[in-house]
Length: 601
Image 1 (cartoon, rainbow, N blue to C red):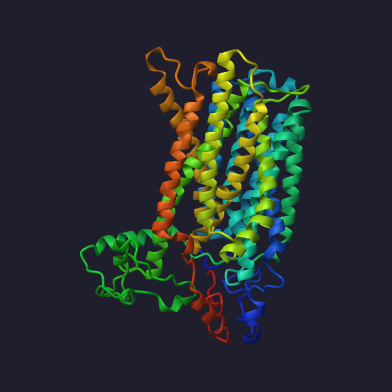
Image 2: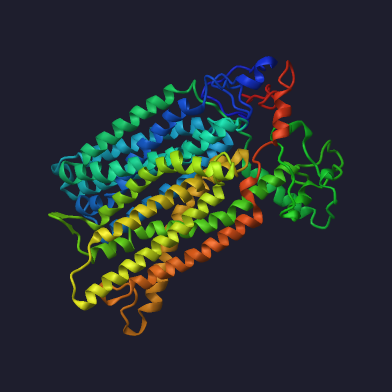
């Protein structure tokens, strides 16, 4: 079986027929989408919000399950499996790391072979199977797990379930956001505005699942039983899996063009083989596939060395055309440039997610040194992350219903502000969060050193709410940006790379903490972050983070102004798209390119 040319439903589909010319402009999408029958997608009956509701349901159930496990995993490993704190923390971190790495594999399968729909449809049952394994293993009676053999079998069952969940997550996480965005026509201005709202509500579902998991499910695990919580997530995910499958006729499917990594590699090799050749002054002399007008990308002047891959060369003897490893098209070169332009933006996001890591580490330690009594209630420091989720849930409607319309009136842009401006606002808010936390720590230290009453833990609430606003700007902007600015054949993979910035942020946070501890605790000094925070200066660390974020923001602004990636086209130009829409006739190419192109079995 050769690589797929089109993303389709699991069954072999009939050859598509071009739509009638008189209805093409108004009835059919203009971005190459097909329906389940491999026909050009009708706007009135496919895609849009009618399809996104079912996709968002999958994302909600996935986050309910993921956070239902991760929020209390260390507690389960220590209290039930009787692991040491060190081993439990290490195993929990290893599992979390796997959950961030497996999406790269799932995204590669989606972009290269299966398409996003089939990838989700394949990996979601594995996710459910892992949850079932956890449900069964956590419901075993004590008599079966008390012996050494029973305990080892119990542990093995738990870890099999955990890593089945991690593997299933790899196919679901990178595809749901990209598949949801695919439901909006790239050639329709009104649908493009709705796509921006989709990413907002996508994040809303993530935080809804996280909030329910950290409150309802964690309470059930601690007070009723672990098995009950897993029964709930299994039922919820199975229900939304059935809903997702039932919506197959409503979805829009996008073409799959084979391995995107092969195309990028060809550009590098071809440019390297022709490094001595001179580039023509007229870029129109570079090689381009004129038959693939639907997905041509306009030439840019950045990374000019790579343009050498598109210099026209004479085919070798015996060849009808030059080898693709010697001569690439301008579009292939531009796709590599698009990926390279994403790299500095990705780097600037890592520090933002290291701030997110502080919300569950150093801020929790700060909260442990504060007065956690609110009236007659005792507030666990870790539970203040609930205010972060609440902040996200509050800010998303405000952003979508208030800020975007206001910004649209000022700027005249469909989304109010560009994606890069949105990310930049979040980076600035992250610096403000660290500065605020430093001021709170200075006040806490002053109270501790003067013998005054400890300050209330509720001083951390503004930081958590502000972090929710920062996530609405930067995290959602990141998801939308990495989808829109990715090459058409790499949208799942670039979405997974965006998610990988979260893991990189956690690792950077651990590195910074280790460096600070090593540099400040030498010579018998307690350091900035000792076990007794009253003897240290956690505020210095927060100020350091704020300064680094300001430098990171300056770097981000430079990259945004230098590369101007927010205004890049990811497929064809408007002129080309309009030209395509006017050519939907009998045997000509319609909005899908070559409508007769099919997978060969």
